[in-house]
Amino acid sequence: MRLTHIALDRYRNIRSAQLEFHPRFNLIVGENGQGKTNLLSSIYWLSTLTPLRSGRLKNLITWGERETSVKGRSEVSSLYHEIEVKTNGERTFPFREGHPRKNREYFGALSVVSFTPNDLDLVRGQPEVRRKFLDRAIFNEQSAHLEAVLRYQKALSRRNTFLKERKSEQLIRAYEATLAEVGARLIMARASYVHSLSSVYSNILHGIGNFSGTLSYKLGVPVVDPLSSTPQVIQQQLMSYWSQHRESDIQRGFTQRGPHNDDLSLRLLDRSARDFASQGQQRAIVLALKIAQIESLSERLQSRPILLLDDVSSELDRGRATQLFDFLRRFDGQVFLTTTHEDYVPVINDRKLWRIVAGQVSEVSARI
Ligand SMILES: Nc1ncnc2c1ncn2[C@@H]1O[C@H](COP(=O)(O)OP(=O)(O)OP(=O)(O)O)[C@@H](O)[C@H]1O
Ligand SMILES: [Mg+2]
Image (cartoon, rainbow, N blue to C red; front, side, top):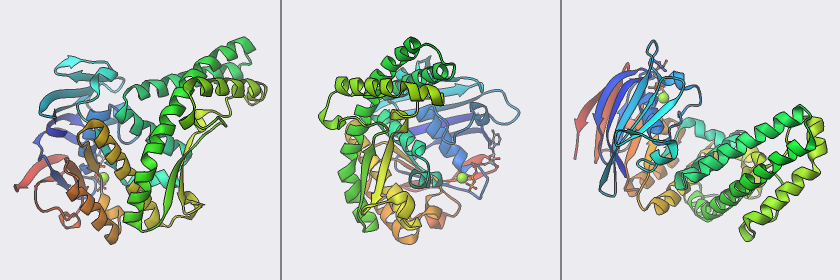
């Protein structure tokens, strides 16, 4: 899979750009604040329909303008796709082959895995960061997962409103059924994804960091092991859990526990990485997590996702940067990297070099 062209129209500080990318490495160089992350984030948005940096859609539009669009041409197993996303700041409008599409009809033409300095929050941050990572990674492989996540959130917020307003038990219970049905799907998908990732993750971590660490799924509510159970059983268990805790949920005015408290447990030997990993170990953990995600996704897609690496060299110490670039050279897909200094990135062959100054992108040199 690769992105052959992109056209940006009034996207953040990039007023206009039409670029033809290299199938392997695209190195985007510029001083601070020139638009490197913006360019990368336009590719992310085109792929996921979600802004890379959380924030409002309105922020994607060049200041003073009313709309923005990003259009791309991708190639997947020798088939070409035209994809485009627009926004007026209120809504997102996806198009494929020139026609408006529903979100779920849109995905598939461009899969990306991003690696940005903020990803260190995967280790340091709250469970929500890890849950989001997990759900996005699953969604990359099964687009129906997004719908399940959204349905769960909607049912949860309804139940919470009813709890707060102390509505009748009957009404509250009605939402538990939906929550349990969708919640069981989330749990099954998360458990099996983490399970499939965990041994690859430990191996990679050992290779990169030369230390032992594990990855496991931590359930927000006590249910039987999802790997040896069925969605029906999990659903029943969730129902009875919420039924037992209904009284106390009413007291507190919200659903205290559920799959919305799930977490990804990252451990270093037998200790929590969040509390005990050094800076360098945290970076190695994030890198291993992402590489495991890439391996899994490649297998699933039968082709390589596109990698977006923002400002990576500054976030990695020398030893680990070498490991990363060894991986990238072996990885035979398309890679976009940003950096403030070309020398930070040891990619000399098979690349296009782009320079960005005040939102103006130009190609510096082309090498074979
Ligand atoms: N909607 C917008 N309209 C116009 N300019 C914007 C908009 N959103 C962000 N910017 C500006 O774009 C500029 C470039 O941002 P960007 O984060 O891409 O820089 P960068 O090259 O990645 O810098 P760094 O090396 O510091 O990470 C910033 O000065 C920012 O204020
Ligand atoms: Mg940046």
